[in-house]
Image (cartoon, rainbow, N blue to C red; front, side, top):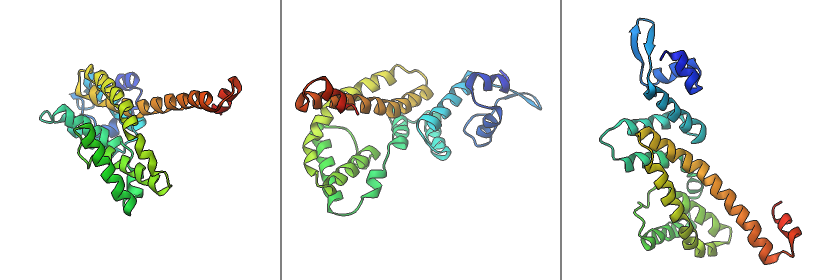
Length: 221
């Protein structure tokens, strides 16, 4: 297909496609003449992945380049590719904003204990582990360190969700589709889980403290 058709099929403007080619994010098309190139389905798939990483994952172009480098490396195990993608879109602001003080040290110990207790094959330096430590440190500073008692309750809920996510990802065939599934699952999946948790909160609050339909409605405000 010509670049115009690629643009129509992918929804990405022609100038943007050319920019991605110049930046090395998208392979150049096969030249059919000095001024014409032919593109294939692989280019359309790559554009879809770039847009997912950019629009859904919120990654910078430099971060996208790192992910694509991992995707294009045939010697890179799929687990490592997915790890690169997931780590680039895991929010770490909480960890970065509170990386000093006794609360942070205690939080890191709690995360390490959780990983050991659950037998999770995750390095303590993982971005998500650091983000969790940041959240726990913030809870300690806010005087709610007791919330750590709920860690295993949250972990019990997270495990089946994680396995369902990976089962979905495993149904993808192309490596690009694998990474796109991780991006969408991490960002939109977390949003969906958060919304479901809030809905459950409304119901639980109404049952615990409410006195009928009016209380349930109030909890939804």
